[in-house]
Length: 294
Image 1 (cartoon, one colour):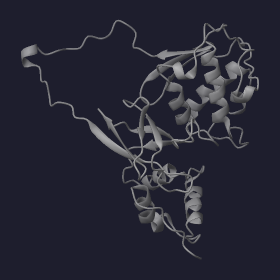
Image 2 (cartoon, rainbow, N blue to C red):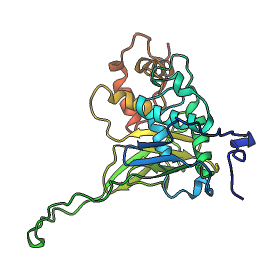
Image 3 (spheres, rainbow, N blue to C red):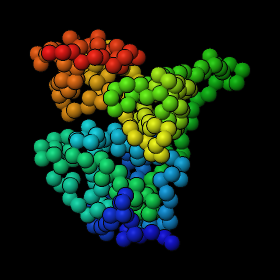
Image 4 (cartoon, rainbow, N blue to C red):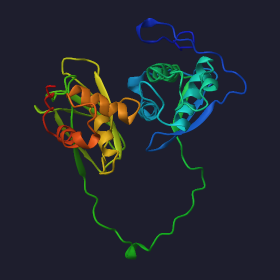
């Protein structure tokens, strides 16, 4: 039986109402997931439905992750497009209250990423929200090609590898965990972590970032999720990327450092440079530091 807006439900059976479209509201968006351009649009009437597990391509997961974390918006343009999509589907006016989502002084976006995900995926499953990979309109510009006899074939492309270690809630390696890695050229690869919590991923070209989900073998659903930057660099922000990977993802850089110092017993006046070596050692493969006695 075909679903309509009244049939949609949130997890746990709570009704999720999708409001009728309002004239003058945007109903089409062109959005990047960091790898490709996608066109999203709202169909006035749901045409068939599909479960999330049946989606052959799922750019929305990565798009939401790029735009929001659990407490705030990361960038204005992408977050504004997703809020406009949410408003068009639900009839809310959140976008009117947040012309610049990164300046959310009333904390309206706390927990919004989960609510947004529920609404958008419900609309996709009901056939109300549609999307497709954006293609350059035909005719395509012709490319100049050398004659076959003179074409430079270049070196053969080599595969690249990178390793990820997953930790449990206590910050220790989670051996035997089921790990899913999503990113450009790594579409939903799943591996089993070794006894040290490590998995190795092979790609044809190293992506800039990826999303990692992991769970204990006894669990059916993924328990943990984290966005990773695969090129840490050696700039001042590299320490904050490491902190984020380890779960210290407070809104401001100072708060992240403060969280880490409290967990490991560092003095309040300690600077980031004072904990850099300890932080990098743990993040890059070492054991979890022991809390200092004060």
